[in-house]
Amino acid sequence: MLKTAIASQEQLFICVGALDEASPEHQFDLLDALREISRESPSVRIFLTGRPFVRSEVEKYFPGVQVISVSPTTDDIKRYLTMKLDKDTVHDAIDDRLREDILRIIPGKISEIFLLVSLSIETILGETTISKRRKRLSEMTKRQNVGDVYTATLERIKAQNGGKSRLAMDTLMWISHSEWPLRPDELCEALGVELGTPDLDIDNVPSILTIVECSLGLITVDSLSSEVRLVHFTLQEYLHDNPTLFQGPHSKMAEVGLTYLNFNSIRC
Image (cartoon, rainbow, N blue to C red):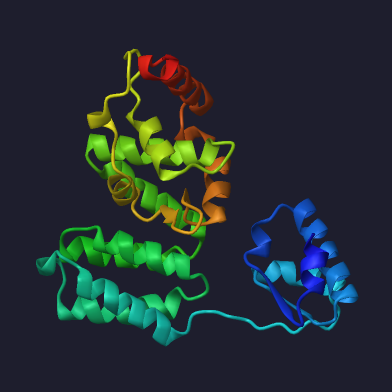
């Protein structure tokens, strides 16, 4: 079907984003299919994006491929940080000196992965005094490993009041252990189920906005696919490598699922 569609076009562009996030076997199958298409249809142009480590695999299938490295510039990072600082609502927890240090130190020490910049400034601005923010700035700029930044963000999540902390950790559990991507309404209802109740209490279902806010930047809602997902696939790897973060996740999810299926409104 794809070949037929291609044949009807004078020129066609095929764009594949985040190739590095595909499993190795799917990467190979996809690259093999794209190579076959490019051989049979010279008018087709292929655009791939991915992290640097997939470059060698791409070059095996497409020798001589043109590679463009894209990374945030220092000015990009400063503009982003300035925007976050301007939107900060805790005005008495920052002064000119701290602001200048943030705009100077973060771009100088964290620049390779923009996600680190984003989570670092969120962690810093999550504090409520100048002293604590300065301490966080020092800590975050020493942590140039994404795993360390995830650890710091989870510490902030757990430091929230009981309800927000539980909601965020349950959210991460559901997203990271689900067998398929969850829609916002599916996630909200799953988090609103109370074991042992005869039906779903709509007033107990959290909103997706509340869920995102409590998760402190670790989840995002994809508006195109209408799915809730982790902010980056490295977070999935981090959660997988730290199983003690969740106690009996599959059992909890099974209990919620069985409770939901036995709701009066569902059984009717």
